Image (cartoon, rainbow over all chains, first blue to last red; front, top):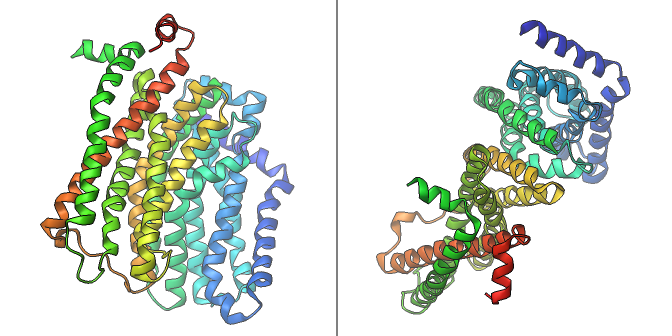
Amino acid sequence: MGAFLSVLFRRQLALGLRRPAQLLNPLLFFALVVTLFPLGLGPSTDTLSAFAPGILWIVALLANMLGVDSLFRSDFDDGSLDQLLLAEQPLYLLVFPYLLVHWLLSGVILAVVSPLFALMLSLPGEGMLVLTVTLLLGSGVMSVLGAVGAALTVGLRRGGMLIALLVAPFYVPVLIFGSAAVRAAVSGLDALPYVALLGAMLSFALALGPLAVSAGLRISADT
Amino acid sequence: MWSFFHKLGSPPWLYRISGSILRWLLPLAVLGLVVGVLWGLLYTAPDFRQGNSYRIMYIHVPAAVVALAGYYVMAIAGAINLIWRMKIADVAMLAAAPVGAALTFVALVTGAIWGKPTWGTWWVWDARITSMLILLFLYLGVIALYEAYDNKTAASRACAVLALVGTVNIPIIYKSVDWWYSLHQPASIKFTGGSTIDPSMLYPLLLCIVSFYALFTCALLANMRVAILDRERRTGWVQRLVEEGG
């Protein structure tokens, strides 16, 4: 079982790393949208630093939402998803390598470079660490929830816009607590309760999410 | 007990029984709503702070209550469809989605109309309003997902999964929006607590809520009947029904 999972994990990781352009696209998207905000809101440092927690979180959310669409797409198209469904190992567990790699290659990278963008939006220094930590946890939750949407729409030719409609409402709690944590840290309050809540949501999502993902994959494979 | 379940799985039986239920439930629901609304509008005292504008609650509150209940009807029907592959559950789930979305919309619009004279603005990012708006998006997501599939059997199962994920998430979303609101700004606007309502206003409200539930059931059954006829249009009993002119 463990060997099977690690093979799957290494396969997904290799597939992801062999397409550096696809890795960079979310980052480029993040940078571009961050650039749009000063152009739309005005370059005043006060305004930007007040809105920075919300802006950074919303852009991270959008980047995740746009990227998660392709999570199962190529495996669905070349038939390896059908092989996965036929495997004797429980699908619930086989979903985890997909989620983990997606999180590593989108959420973690984005979280690590987010202080750079936070600097551009003049987010006060106190918020930097909390921003990174909450993005690490929150992008995990978003990867799981996004995977549910991806699994349900992978069989459809025109999934792109639809998946955003399906998963955006589920992202609401993550956005609320993630940006609230950063705002609390900036204003000198304790951000730990929000971080703990995000952690709780992540464990909840990890426990139940793969159930919905595997149900969605089975339905999509039937079509 | 089991024969009841088997009958429930039979479209012709459900079509017949829902027809006879509708025949008495629909007039009763409309009567209840008319009486409740007239009672509320004409025979209750105006609120001492809100004046007459509070009377919109006789539509607003029932719509909001039933809109939320409708989501659970949809999700439970979806679960039954996923677990037992019961065709009727799948029909019920899809019939509930547009009705629930419409009720959510009614609750939002009546809330906005009430908000204008009371709060001085059409829209406030209040916790309850925001979670109702998200509920509307959840309903619309289910409808959009169903429309996107060509294979309708798969579509209804996908919608069932989505509705169930939504059910797990609704309490989390509701709670988080609640916290977000309370930490976001001081409560400049407070809803009057439910228990502080005067009995003379409560009874017509309860009557309206019950009537809305009945009306929801009627709309659900009517939608289901159309869907059943559509699905079974090639079978003998539907063709006989058409020939008889029923």
